[in-house]
Image (cartoon, rainbow, N blue to C red; front, side, top):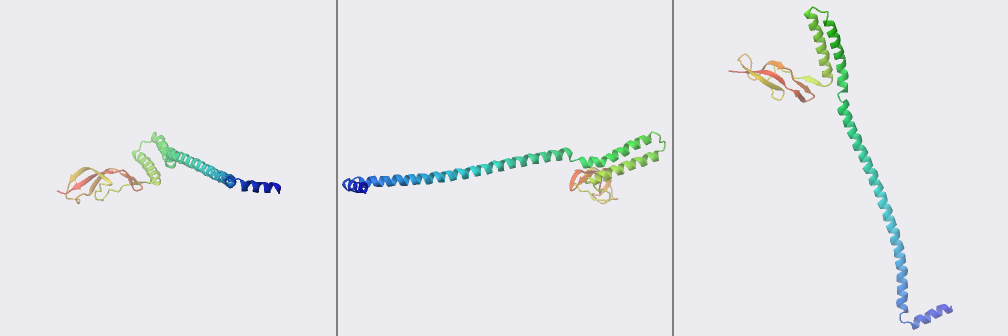
Length: 188
C-alpha cells in the first residue's frame, strides 16, 4: 500500500504524471495492436500461400492437359488412317492373288472378273471409311460437285445436263474431295 500511496503522491505532485500514464497506456495499446496486426499478417500470409499453392496446382493441371491434348492430336494424325488401312489390306491381298492367278490365264474374261472383284472390294472398303461417289448420270451440272472440262453443243439433252463422266468425283461426308470431271450439254 505504501508503494501505491507513494505513486499517488508522486502523481499528485508531478504535473507530467498524467502524460506518462497516457503514454504507458498508449504503449500497451500499441503492443496489443502490434500483436493483432502480427496475427492478421500471419493469417493473410497463410491465405496467400494457400492461394499460391492452388494456382501452382492449377497451372500444373492445365500444363498436363495441354500435353495430353497434344499427344492425342499427334496420335490421331499418326494413326488416324489405321482403320482405313486395315480395311484396305484384304484388297491388297486379293490383288496379289489376282496377279498370281493372271500368270496362267489366257482368257481375258477371267482377268476382267478378277479386276472387277478387286475394284468392288476396294470401293467397299473406301465406302466404309466414308467415301462416297458423286452421282453424275442424268444430273444437271452443279459447279460445287462437278468440273466441266468439255461442253458439247446438242439439242438431244437439256441445257447444262451432264452427258458423260470423264473422271469420277468423290466426297467425304459433306466435303468434296475431288469434283467429278464431266462433259456438259449446251443447247444451240
